[in-house]
Amino acid sequence: MRVVGLELLGDKRRGVGIYWGDGRLLDLSRALRIFMIAKGREDPGYIESPQDAISRGLLDIGFLSDLLSFVETHRLYEDLLAPDSKLLAPIPHPSKVIALGRNYASHAKEMGHEVPKEPIIFQKASSSIVGPEEPVIYHRGLTRIDHEVELAVVIGKVCKHVTEDEALSYVAGYTVLNDVTARDIQASDIESKLPWFRSKSFDTFCPIGPCITLPDEIPDPQSLDLSMMVNGEVRQKANTSEMIFPVSFLISYISSIMTLYPGDIIATGTPDGIGPVFPGDIMEAYVERIGVLRNPVLEEDRLCTGPG
Ligand code: MG
Image (tube, rainbow, N blue to C red):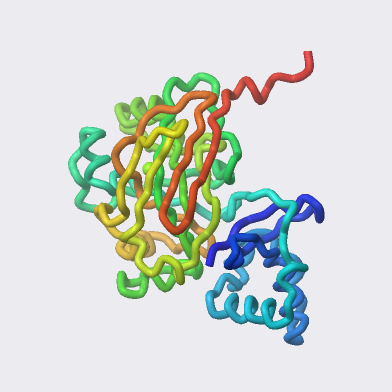
């Protein structure tokens, strides 16, 4: 199952969509209200995002299967289609985005580093998140920003000190994340022994989407092709089997340091082939079974030009 964050343009509200078998989108927020009321349960109101659904424990595969069977049995499908809508970031405001440095040997090598013996984790500001098709801003004063395609894990339940064996049961699903980086700032900060936080956290530097694929479609996160195309040219191409520290280890490791909350995101690192992008470029980050996350690069001044 694949779920998306939606802006329903006709209804002027935000919601959650789920892909039906024929590829069309069902308005899950409406379907949920009808289902809950029919079952004699409390009206949940409109859920506003997949993040909202995760926090309320509603992105459970068993529960969603029951809901979709209900839609099918009662022939509600046509009425619940979400035709006039735009995709939004599925997790708009996580409590944190934890990212991995050098989790593919090929990328560690291209940056001139040894393969790490322990995960290197850093944070991206949650406020840097944008959704599919939203522009990544080439901020004034920067001289180099890079693309980094990554598989991102979305946490489904509060998680602290979990073992590797149980780690994947805490995953709500997976999405694509482009860990956009101000490489010039990062290089000077590394030189000065400063953290990576600011180079990773400019507004718009964390595109995510296009959907969250639930674990029923990704039972093993270590076997997914991923790639990055810029203006139609392949720049990065790898498979998640090449990660140094796999997803289950990362969840266990990070949860031994900090509590992970529903909706928290772990960006699992990028393979080799990173490189600069410029205003006017189109980035297309792809992960198998999730899809293509497409974002244009826009010069900051373009946003600031007012009348006259
Ligand atoms: Mg990265």
